[in-house]
Length: 372
Image 1: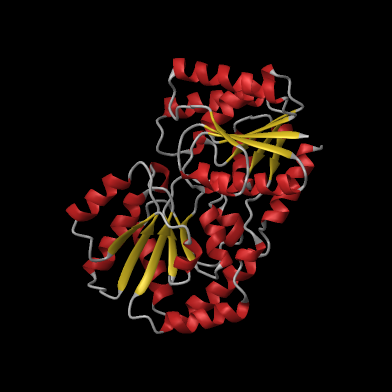
Image 2: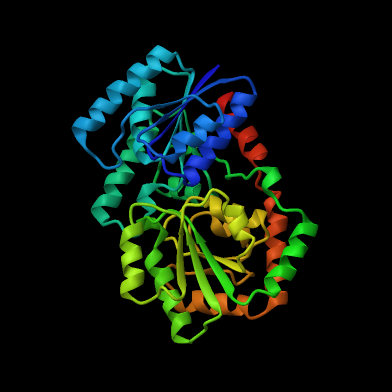
């Protein structure tokens, strides 16, 4: 059995982590696995380091008809020459081109994983939302299966009449060996209690859907209250990194926000944080949320995508806020940071959630789809 995974971006985001774990799992199970990436980037090295074969077929992130056509021709040939049985695409642009190429090659399984449907982005104009919805409806016809990473996206698919009978929910997962042991977590709490500053962490791509403007406004509230013991650590990179780097300087927020760039050992950084913040206005199910769970790190998040169904399905934890509700985000963070016992209680709750969302579970459920 030969499996081809296709993704547009080569940065290290949640979709890339998802694909990496699938590739490793099925390679270890004896399947022949290959990955096609649409551009150069650090994800190529991640795959190569794990001896997973990877090729680059240029796929533009935005619609560019001639380049898209060339990408389709190249990928169609690649699938034909490789005689792949399963084509499993991730991210919207790769999802369109790979599904057409798979359809033209009559592959046994032509699967798309939606890491948050594009048409759910509230910042899009009505015309763009309708356009992306139309695309997803069209290409769902040639999909054999559509995987969503949250029940939220499944509900969106149902509401907007995407081929519901083809849809499956498979939550993201994290490696079991990444979950901190309870004794180590307890020791970490003692270290955090003695820190001079409260550390609020952000981990993610500097991209529009992460709504970093909200984070900056919340940081300004802490600065206005002269809470010098609070510091924001922003870990990651992306297309908007330089924009926000300049904005942090222009708004004189360097004293409260530290830009850490990309880091390989994200979970070690998390172990030095008191809380994590998610300000996104569009998500499927953030991998960084599950990574925080694996370290027993409490998260205050916007109520977006599949976050609620994982960490607060009953809405009783006071950890979710409406998108762009700066005051509630500030209030929830302040309540968390000012009470060690409450923070540790919530951190333990997050740690207990980690074992419910593992890579093993994610891959076993994906295997069922492959052989259904």
